[in-house]
Length: 510
Image 1 (spheres, one colour):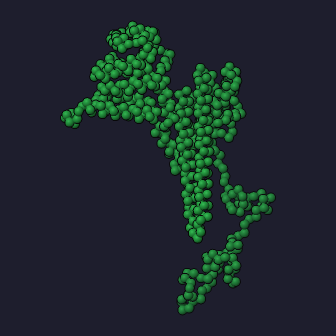
Image 2 (tube, one colour):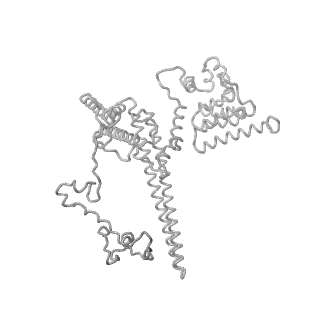
Image 3 (spheres, rainbow, N blue to C red):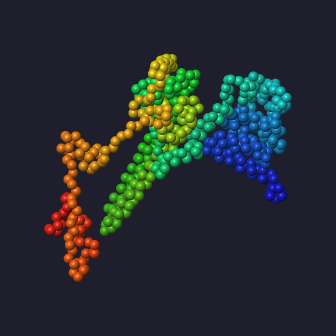
């Protein structure tokens, strides 16, 4: 319709711009900052609504609110003077003036004496020189030192070097990614948890990576839990340059689990108090109703019982819903912990996993890390590192002397042998018999036990069939053709004492 002239193009452009801004506001309401930033970037790149100045103003203000001043400055520059690859985007004079006013307001927060003419002159000079060669003269006119301005403008290192440069935007992006993990799970991870739950209600991950209390280790090196090789790898990781960062992160992850545990405890306690008050209120109402029921007491009691049963079912469902919600909250925390520990390069962590065996193994690793950051806090860094070095030397010495790594302690699953199968000796299973314990036939017992468990009596002989009197070839009335009285005594479940005098009960009926 717009191409045919039925709709005003300006009206259509404004409507699409409103849609983009509303979509970004929706993400901001849900605190999905990264999604909001991506929405604004898509909006300014739109061929129809990308020339509307309102989108650029909202984009720059959002960046400024999030503390990304460099990004906000670049948004104003892209809209007003363009960049090295594109011309100015906002061509309407009134909208451009609004952008200049917003740009000046933001820059005056650093330099209150800056005027609009000085800003436009500095931007124009910097923009023209930027296409030819870098120049910092314009920065002096805005009122900032040249060295500081150059440092602020470089967001990514241009020259490749061995030093990793961490920029403000990179930190913000990483923070937004971490916060998104606490609000929602990846679809594939949610699907794995649902498949593991089946028809059962969701449960919190067991065991958790970090227990509320400090674990008690029989060996501080962790070799009884993880074996020599993994214990050596973790000890070396703690002694590396990033060991302090790893322990600080582990302490924060443990604190995160503890806070969620406390939150769940208070929520369940509050719900139980509320449900108890509701039940007491309903019971008092039932008592008052019964006091005036009169002749309809029986009907009132039935109605009260039905209402009370319904309330109990409702209370149980509300409690199950609360536990299910917190189960998913703990799963989100587990996903966050696994992701962070994987990025920190902790041995044994290779991304999020819901496998029970993997969770059990990672929990053992975190038990060692939990003990490590507890000792680091109480002993001090130097003393703890000295202890770790002595443990590392002992582990390596034992590995060299034994020629192989020691497996975990008894009671824990040992690593698979090289062939991939464990040797199992054939085990004889004696036939099971109800006459004796342990599935053994009494004749196989030792002599002392044979006196306690004598062999069972032989089974009774089958009953003898009696000749049914025939009357001209017709059996007596009331009996089926194939049923005789002697057989009925064994097939009809009579009560003991009701057997006919001439037919005693078989031995196994007693």
